[in-house]
Image (cartoon, rainbow, N blue to C red; front, side, top):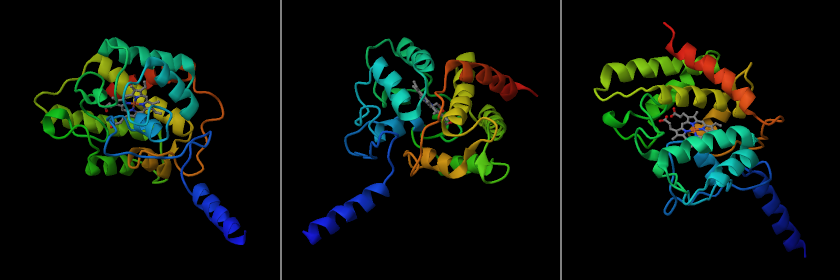
Length: 237
Ligand code: HEM
């Protein structure tokens, strides 16, 4: 009996030291059979089971529900994002691997990956990732202003070195949306995202230990005006 109690207690200690989603979903990564995207936030959702863990046959409803349950992203903005995906792909389901397709949603001048013409655009490039973390002005949090500054550096570099550099209005919208929604989901707009939280998502694709989603649901009205401002600042001289 005592042995069983010890075993249960040990299991509880191990389980509590393991990253979980807001409703307790555990991190389980199946590297051999799963598809993953260049999108670290979506990979994080799949790793915790808020999207199909294998990253395959993802429906519009999966995206909307997954964003809501895992990140407390409102169904309004979830629908807007999911519509962009399915309009581009013209299918009923997508896989996370589909999202690697260059110049569909995946784009040049990523904060963390090589441009498609300059190397592997599917994996995180350690130097670029470090550049993103180093862009934190106070080395504690990464703010939207830090990210805008880093995006401008990345954009200038792509313009200089990538003979096939593509930067459309759609891609500018995506890039500004990524900065905005990342800040709103993982931090506070006025103070930024803690560096260890950013590392957990970008480097390990897992929710940080003890992480709780934003108390208020992140709605379209939170995202869209800020996204427009970020897009303007990414461009300004
Ligand atoms: C329908 C939902 C979403 C889809 C289909 C999607 C897809 C993608 C894709 C394909 C990329 C790669 C873009 C690129 O840099 O080339 C990307 C990047 C990114 N996404 Fe998402 N994403 C979604 C939702 C989110 C959410 C909810 C967040 C934040 C909580 C987020 C944060 C980011 C960030 C920060 C990047 C930039 C990564 C980088 O520059 O390397 N995304 N996303």
